[in-house]
Image 1 (cartoon, rainbow, N blue to C red):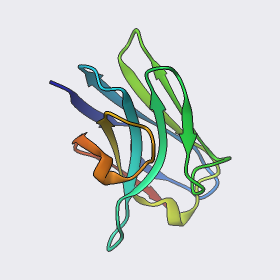
Image 2: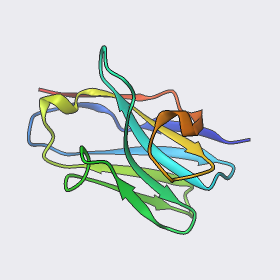
Image 3: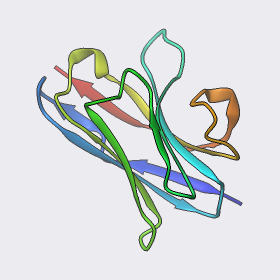
Image 4: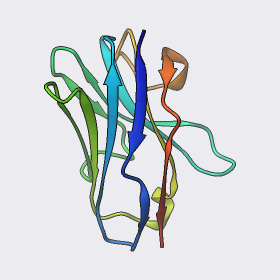
Length: 118
């Protein structure tokens, strides 16, 4: 039974950085980060499979980095050069495949952590 708990969100000025954390228990092949802004669909950002392969959406490429501490059972999302449009609720999720970072492919979700960029 997989459980995910995000933390690390907050308020930051445009151009700043944040590092989100997702503590997980249990095993699924793929873990990923998503975000959802007000009135928007949930958007996939980055995914990491159990073999260490990463992929990024166009929104995340170049500014966001996904990585994992296996010992600490924690998934991270480092976000740099943040913009106002990055403001959203950020979620980590787990699923069986990293084939694509779309919400319907992930069936375990954390509660989310809010990021506000001003």
